[in-house]
Image 1 (tube, each protein chain N blue to C red):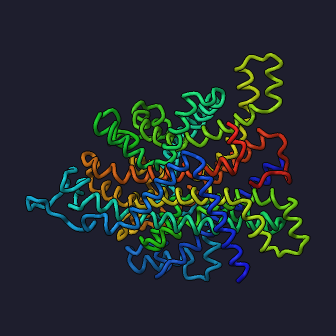
Image 2: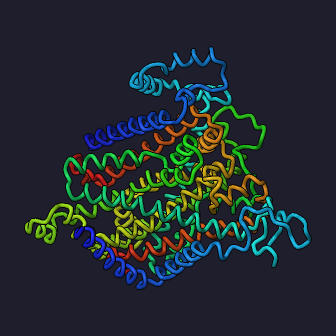
Image 3: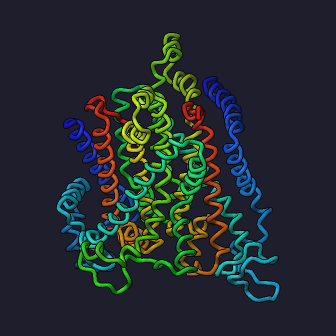
Length: 297
Length: 328
């Protein structure tokens, strides 16, 4: 119990430091603000969205509002199925953010632990874990999602599972390398001499020191999850009952309206690029800390 | 160096074997009748029973597994559920189309990325450096299907400059790879998909080259080379760039992992008749033999490219010997 509280306390202290790191970089600040904006939209989606995203809407003239360009009535126009693009966009923000955050969080948890354990213990454990990571590197990412979804069905959770199963690999490699470099440092040896348990050394002594790297890869993993989910959904392997930005583009693609309906294409496309960009900006702020040589520019 | 190559080759083989095994398990984990993934449910019962025996599906799992591996090695990949063609024949044709697009896109972005990265570092904080850094971050954040769709809308639909998809005009008679690469039409069809993949790949080698050039430029031997009175371009290319290149090779394996995913969506957007599009179509139609074989082929492609990156790393960095080889 005390160990858990200790870890939590260290994490909390760490988080505050992280905010300071992001704030120190202008680009990082912009990125963090954009992410925050999307988070707010996701949380308040029911309040913001003017229509039910699945409803077939009628215009003021009483006719079914199909393929309408943006107007006062429909802020971002309507789809071929007479659905409101703006409302779809708002709800899709929620789903996309959830998928991104959940897969990002789980994958960093797996990646960090594998990296820390492999790097700290070294030897045979390291060898086994890293060969395993190599094998996962042999898996083509998007095709793996496609196969998994084709086999087990188009479900929200399988999309997350497929993303998580692959995406931890790069964080594991990088965190292992960093842990390896810290393993023989004075403070680790001192903790060992004091009789600290391995777990305590890993999570209380080594982990705080690789925090910037850990958060850098958390941001990366979320960004990759968003890209992967968008790609899978665009190819028609997303959850048909969950609205995502990639899913909106898939609907547009199969509707054959790509030629004309720019108002249907631009909003989800811009949102994907903007969110991923923001995450890359945040990660760039960490990169300058994790790799101090970059700062001397 | 020889031992290093042998070690890397063995590891690659092991990885291929492991991926094939994971695939076997995945396809047999399916709810319902496991034979439905190998034998088309559309066939009549007698034919199904005959195939069941031929594939050993009435045998215990371990026998099936051995048979599966044997069939993989002997290229007996079954027949497509939808067209009844042998899977191998379908793949063989698609393989070259994918390799062409990917090879051209990757080499284009690697060469251009390394060159731009070098120049950015040499005139650091200049307009090119700052502009290209921001452009790279944005283009890296745009999933390739968005770039592709945008190009399609603007350059094909609006301006009519390029065909909207395919590799050749519809109805063209193609009798081999040579026919394709010598046709002007092919290059016309190639432009948009290549720009799309290059926009996605370019950022990584460019930024890595820039950062590692900056690092190299701060080191003693560069100062020494300058002090010797060598002309700047010689210092830049012969001394700095060669050493900075190593970092690019290191990250290229990371790049390759994403290259395949990019390939799949780009082929779908531009109806490019490659393995990526085949995989998407097969998976959507539940054509399992084709989906399985395509997945494996894509995996082998990645593993081989990773292997090539490892080997060229060893060649660029003579310090690498087996045992001391990097696991990173």
